[in-house]
Structures are given as C-alpha cells and as structure tokens.
Length: 145
Picture 1 (cartoon, one colour):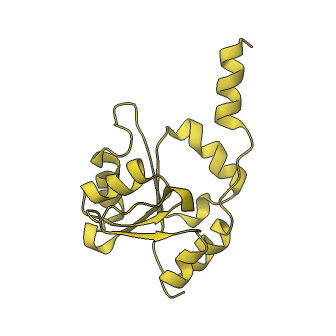
Picture 2 (spheres, rainbow, N blue to C red):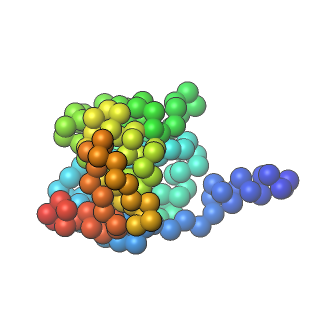
C-alpha cells in the first residue's frame, strides 16, 4: 500500500470507541423513542465503524452522506432524516457533539438540539435553542428515562 492508502484504510476502518455511557444511554432510550442517526460520511466508511461498536440495530434509520449530498451542517441530511422517519421538526430532538455541524445544522431545519459539549467549549450563544450537557449519559435523565 502507498502511504496515502495506509492512512485512508486506518482512518476508515481503524479502532473506534463510543462516548462513555453512549451504548447504555441508547439502549435505555430505544424502547421509548425512535432513534435515528445522521452520519457525516458515506456508508462504506461509517458502517464498518457501527458494526465494530455493535449499535446499528439500535437505530431505526441511518442517513449517510451521499455522493451528491452536502456535509452537515447543510440542512439536506437533516431534512432527509425527517422524511425517512416521518417526523416533523417539532417532534424531533437532535443530539450532537459538534456545535457547527450538529447543533447549527439542526437549528437550520428548526430541530431542537442537545449539545454534548466538552466543558472547555461551552458557548454563551443565546441565539440557538440549545440544551448543553457534559456527557451523553446525562441524556437519559434529561428525557426522564
């Protein structure tokens, strides 16, 4: 393999780890909510990672970026997820850890958002309807599960 191919292979298929508490939280929410996932990469790149984590079955819908689809925060991925799930923006809640691509993207289509943030990255931006939590594990108590 050429150096670029080695990097690409490791980047695509290397070891992945979920956020602390993510699997437990997702499992707890599965019975009460429809869980959908928006991936900012193509299926060929992301599906092996999801398989490695063993969490694909927790999601009813997984939307991947397509060959002609813009990356988040472009509204198209969020709109596609809403169409596929049959939900309206006021029925959805988006949870993400990247302010620009996740939170701003959700806001662009009027989906309320929960930002899982690193304490050093907190924002005082009052213009977005954002709930901030420091850990994905806090989501269960936030939603009352």
